[in-house]
Image 1: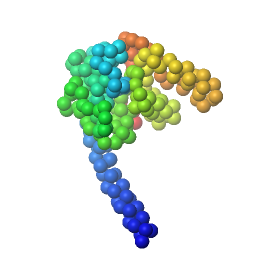
Image 2 (image 1 turned 30 degrees about the horizontal axis):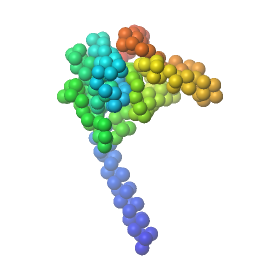
Image 3 (image 1 turned 120 degrees about the vertical axis):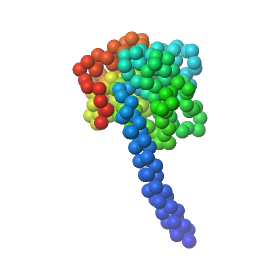
Image 4 (image 1 turned 120 degrees about the horizontal axis):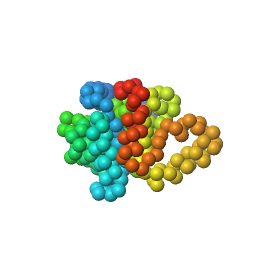
Length: 228
């Protein structure tokens, strides 16, 4: 009897998995349709826990304003903290402000600076991550936690393995990122787990002007287009 119940439960799981495919497909189709119409954008990442008016919040606002003035839309994860700051800067500069929102049990709620027609909701992290990578012309990464590191290393891995074309990855805040960069060099590189050229996949800066200069300089010699 127990064996029959086990098989019945397993079959129900398989059925639910099959139906989940359609929900996943729906998220991809909706995301592709909306994002493909927006134009060149840069994604800004950072902690949802960063408070309004703090150093990195203000810096994210400034970076987003200058990106918008340079003709780039701004994409964030749609929530509070650094994400809010990115959308706020784009909105204040009259630029495109996109939010890729994720349903989470804590922290996440839509910020008010996203363009109403450019707010997308996702249930699946992996679908949302595809949108960031496919439709971003660059990643600007401010101090954050696991989610921020996840996006950073996902992009570097895809570029390193040539699954997508290279694009600028700019880490903002040498005081924050310095220890990580030292570890990458002193551990991963020293133990030959990465190549020296892999450390060229990103830049570390401290000012908004440096961010814009790196992204603009890159696209003087590269075409603006989706990444895969």
